[in-house]
Image 1 (cartoon, rainbow, N blue to C red):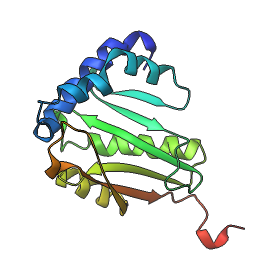
Image 2 (cartoon, rainbow, N blue to C red):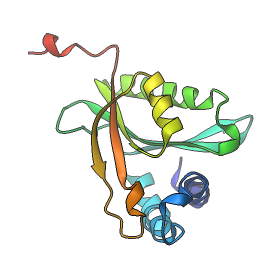
Image 3 (cartoon, rainbow, N blue to C red):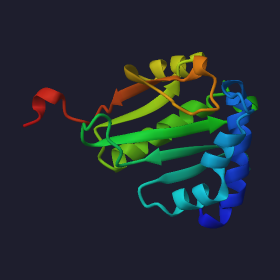
Length: 174
């Protein structure tokens, strides 16, 4: 995604977040939408060389986006890639497109010579958790979000990790 596409990405991010996560917020998500998907933040992410953003397209239409942080390590374990966001509009769910987006993320991790990929997922996102488990991820930890406008019931998120097949096994490392 190029910097000139920041307005389109900002709109898409807001729509996708509210489609999936409106239930999290006391304030209808207004604070989060402004903080995370405002133009200043989106433009900064697009200019950050440590962040990769991609539109997910189908038949010429943009149906979601993928955000990767190729040099993001989990718990100080080197050589990780974070899949920060993999979002599709609800109407495109359960059509194999999430799997294709995940495969693209894994291929990018391989190109960057990463040993593993990791992500956060809301503990209330049962379908997403099941998707990641089917794709070889395991739950390796948890954290809690301290966002004031977030309903306390929904603040727990899981950390999930998948070791890449081409990475050496821990016993093979010096």
